[in-house]
Amino acid sequence: MRLLITGADGQVGWELRQTLMPLGEVIAMDRKACDLSKLQDLPRIIREAAPDIIVNAAAYTAVDKAEEEEPLATLINGTAVGVIADEARKLDALLIHYSTDYVYDGTKTAPYTEDDLPHPLNAYGRSKLAGERAMEQCGGSYLILRTSWVYAARGRNFLQTVLRLARERDELRVVADQIGAPTWARDIAGATATIAQRARREIEQDAFNSGQFNVTAAGETSWFGFAEAICVNLAQQTGSQRRSPKICPIGSVEYPVLAVRPKNSRMTAERVRVRFGVSLPDWKQALARCMKNTVLA
Image 1 (cartoon, rainbow, N blue to C red):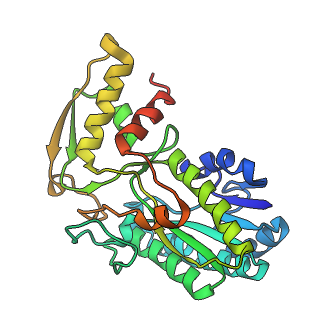
Image 2 (image 1 turned 180 degrees about the vertical axis):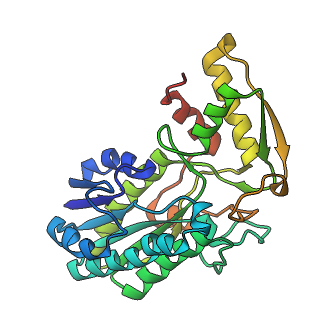
C-alpha cells in the first residue's frame, strides 16, 4: 500500500511520517514538494505518487492573518482540497483530510456533534468549511477528521508560545472564556493510522462509507487552564531551576485579535470510537507525555 502525506513538515504531518510507516510505503511531501497554492501542479504530483491513501495534513493555519488573506486561505484550504479530492476519486484512493472546531460558531452549550450545522465566525473557519464542502461535492472515498487546539513539541503552537513567554515574563494573561480540548499532534497521527488501516479494510470488504468524524482529546479546559497545566508540568520538570510565571485569567474582549474565536470548541468523539475503535486520551495525560518529549531550555 502506498500512502501520500501532504504538509509533511507540519505538526501533524511530521508525526504521520512515523505512524503511517507500518501501513506501507510512505511518500512524505513538504510544502516545497507539494505547494497547495499552486493548483496547476497538484494533479501531476498526485498521479505520479499513485497513492492508495492520501492524508492531507497541509493547510493555511494562520488564523488571524487569514482575516486579511481570505482568498489565499480559501485557495489552500478550500479549492486545493477539491482538486486533491478529485484526483483521489480518479485514482480510487482514500482521502483523509483534517478540519477544525472553527467551522462552528461556539454558541451551543453542549459539545458539538458531527451532525451539528457549521457556522464559522472567521475567515479560517470559512476556508476549512470550503474544503469540507469541496470533498463532499467531488465524491469518492473520503474521511474528514475535525480536531481542535492542536499542539506539538515542535512548530508554532500554544504550548511553544507559553513555554517561550514563561522564560521571558513573570505574568501571563490568558483567555479563560473559550473552552475546548487541547489535542496532541502525535495522538492525532496515531489515530489517523488506525483509521486509515481500518478504513482500507472496509473498502476491501465493500463496506466503506465516507463521512466526518471528530478526533479530539478527552476532557476540556480553557486556554487559561491549558496554560496553567503547561506551567505546572514545566515546574515539575525543571524543579527549582525556574520560577513559574503568574497566570491571570482574562476575557476574550481583553485580548483583541483579528479573528473571532468560538467560545465553545468542545466536540464529541463517540462516532469515531464506535466505527474505528479510536479514543484519544485525556488532554492532561497527553500534555504530560508531550512535554517529556520537549526540549526545555
